[in-house]
Every structure is written in structure tokens, then in C-alpha cells.
Length: 359
Image 1 (tube, helix red, strand yellow):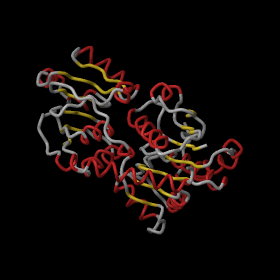
Image 2 (cartoon, one colour; image 1 turned 90 degrees about the horizontal axis):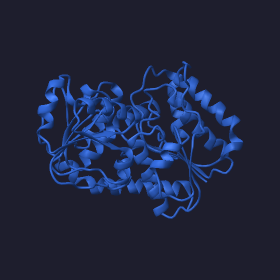
Image 3 (cartoon, rainbow, N blue to C red; image 1 turned 90 degrees about the vertical axis):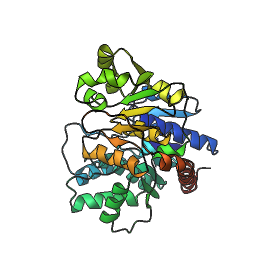
Image 4 (cartoon, one colour; image 1 turned 30 degrees about the horizontal axis):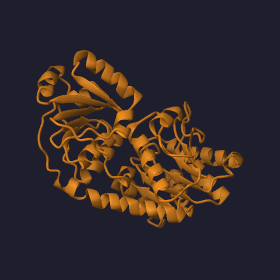
């Protein structure tokens, strides 16, 4: 059994996309065995991610510690203790793969619990562990014991790939550059080429956490903004987004909803002249890969790191300061590098196959 650990199940567009990408990659590259996907939930992912035989969606390894305070080192020990107690439940596992995303970011101390559990399970069972496309930064209050905990986590993986430079540099510094498994790469979204459903006309794409993050602080500007487009669509990437859309559509009935089912299984509805305003990371990344311009909002260090990753790749998006202003950015670098980045990520995928030795 191949055991994948991911951030899916809430659900969240980016996390579901990454699981979908890796399931397709493993099956298309010849792995025919059972795959278990351990996420935040299973029922919603089962409904969204279809067409892959012999795949189980579960919620097994604890990842959150509600109401419990602690340091990175404290949560590392909790994860290690879990691994020692739970070995019998994982006896059939041939390899562990921590899929990409920010669900194990050091922004939360308890992220060390999940990473520790997986790497210690791998060590106790003598099976390989790999991690790809992880967003770890930013760190908080990292002391010596915390640095040691993170060093053990990275050392416990045959490959530990960071998707952003800040994560890679931070981990290189705290491990003194002595762990060859640590690499700097790309987000796992690049494992597959874009799945796009082109359309006529010019669309405005919205995706965010609050009304202010997608239409600005002044509600009065929204009607004039919407009039510049043939259609306005809202990407409801999570349950919270669906609630935001419900509030938004009461004021602005023209805003059409695109849920995860449509985004993942029908293709991204992106035309060449479209524009996006988003607070979310993966909508920004996928839209920039498609060559459209847009605005992003980032209200925390966690999201500044995520959006910074995309702008570093050449995204034509700009940070929204007050009110949204439509512009046409230069997408040449992002689009011209697309095919090469997909091939680069698939090389990582082939390296994963070799390291896990499952085919």
C-alpha cells in the first residue's frame, strides 16, 4: 500500500487538486497497488476526486491539537509517541508520501505533530518517506529544541522538497546545509498541465476570504467594476467561500458560483482576456500559469509567503492596496516557463517513484 498524506478533505481547491494530480501521476506511471489518502476528511474528497481505482480516503493520523499549547519540540514528541503506539495499524504500508501544500506550515506549532508521526512511522517500519512541494515558512519562535525537531523531520525523508525559497533557506539554515534530502522545487500543482475550459467574452474571477479582499473596502465600487466584464464568477474553494458567495450574491446577483466540482472536473473557465482578484494562493497560481493578470491580497505572513512564491515565478498579478484597478500585466515569463516547469516537476515525480521503489 502506498500511503499519501495531504491537506484535502475540508475541502479546499488547492489541496484537492494536488491529490488529484498525484493519483493521476502514480496510475499513469504504472503503480497498480492500493493507495490510501489520509487527509482532513474523506467523504467530500471521495465525491470530488473520482476515476481512480483502488483508492481509499481516510482520516487516520492526528494533525491538529485543539486546545493544546506547545512548542515545535513538544508537538514533535507527541507525533513520535503516536508513531510508537500506532505501528500495527500501518504494517501494510510500503511507502509514505507527504503531498504538497501549506497544511504543515510552521506557521502552526502543531504542524510538527503530523510531520513527526509520518517520519517516525517510516523509521520504525523501515519504509521510505518523501515530501514534495511543501510550504513550511514562516517559522515562529524557533528555539534550539525546535530546530532539532525540524532537522529530524527533514532527515527522516529521502526527499524533502520545499515549494518556496523562504522555506528552503530557513530549513537550510537550521540544518546547517547538511541534509542532502532538502531541495528547492515547485508547488505540486505543476505536476500536471493546466486543465482549462476556454470561453468567449471577458470574465472577472473572484476568490477570497472576505468581501473587502475581492472587491475592495468600498462596496460602492463593485457595480462599476463588474460592468467592465461579460461575466463575474466566484471560485468557492472552501465551505467558508460558499458562505461568502451567498452573502455577495444577495447584493450582486450577477456573481455566478464555480465550486470545486466544476473547477476540478470540468476545467478552469479561463479566457485570454480575463482578470482575477483573489486572496487565495492556488487560484492565483493557476490563473497566472494561464497567462491572465489580476490582483491579490495578503493579510498575514503566511499568505505573503504564498503569494510571493507566485510573483517570484513571474506572475503578472499585483498587490491590491485599496480599491481594485484593472490592468494588463506582462505574463511572458510565466507562460514561457510553463512547459519547462511541468517537465521539471514530473522529473521530481519520477525521482519519487525511484526513491519509493514501488513499481
